[in-house]
Length: 89
Ligand SMILES: [Zn+2]
Image (cartoon, rainbow, N blue to C red; front, side, top):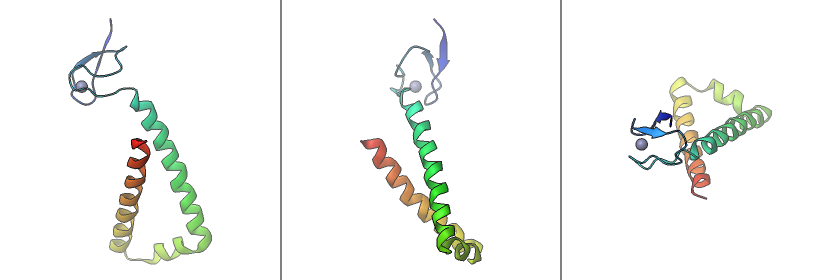
């Protein structure tokens, strides 16, 4: 039986195990998360395209660096909320 390392607790886990016997981490969720990340990247690209179309993106570029950082943080915060909602389903 081959073993792999649990990403959550670094414990040894059988490659066939669906959950970690040490910390209970669910390995099946990994592929789901990758899928969600792909969706996320596609959505962000789409939003940027829409912003560009409206000229908002240009205005964003004119903002001072600090304002840009704050806006980015707020956007990511909102996004994380959406992301977590999706996971909870
Ligand atoms: Zn573990």
